[in-house]
Amino acid sequence: MQIDQLYRREFVALLGGAAVAWPVAPRAQPQIIPVVGFLGAPSAAPYARYVAAIHQGLEVGYVEGQNVKFQYRWAEGRYERLPELAAELVREQVSVIIPIGGAPGTVAAKAATTTIPIVFAIGGDPFELGLVGSLNRPGGNLTGVAKKAAHAVDQQLVVLNASTEGELQQVFASIAKEGVAAVLVGADTFFTSKPALFVLLTARHAIPAIYPWRSHVDAGGLMSYGASLVDSYRQTGVYAGQILKGAKPADLPILEPTKFELVINLQSAKAIGLTMPPSLLARADEVIE
Image 1 (spheres, rainbow, N blue to C red):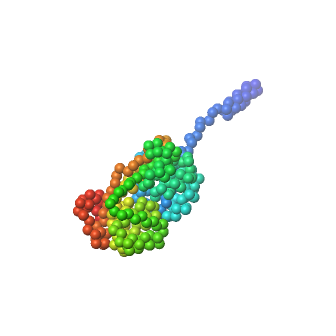
Image 2: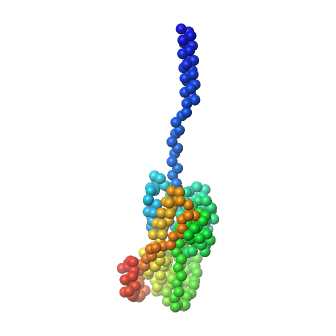
């Protein structure tokens, strides 16, 4: 009886020891949700529609809060803040950076990281800006959408620069005094962030102005012609989604815009005493009356 109990205790002990040695089923690892970092040179409000377009481009396979997250950094028009804001996104180890507002944010993002993918939408030539090695094979960690345009007109051109609201007011006073016939506004982030001021100055001096983006026309500007920013930013969202799924920026060619839009504001034309030719109105993608 004692012998049976001894063997029984040894069997239980051995069974317990063997149980400790048995492999334990591995626990499921928590899913790592990718983060898309937005680096905005301007303030958020004027670019809300473009952020929405990026989200639309990402919608194929990605839902915010479920399998993708977003972080936003806005410089509020203060370009000197961009390097630190870009560095913050790098420290947060975001999965991809999308600069908003043109070249300044893209340049800052490129300087902040050589590993995190960057998907841009700019108006200049990314090769000439030193952002990519070529348009077909960008190399490195950048890709995106770019627009390069050259115009030749049989008119005398005067190039004027402004980097503050005060300088902009001086420029308009000068061109009005010199009898300039019309103004072509460059695709600069500072200019893009000041649609109300441009509308005020052009109306005050009765000077026709054409803008690269329709946001100025929506604010009361005369007319705009250029690549559709909504479509360009939507494509950056598509590219960002492809990168999150494993594509490399170096292998994604720089895209050129395929959708251009001409928008005319007839109320603004009437305010400065300008009659728009019917042929031009017929070609417009949208006429605001």
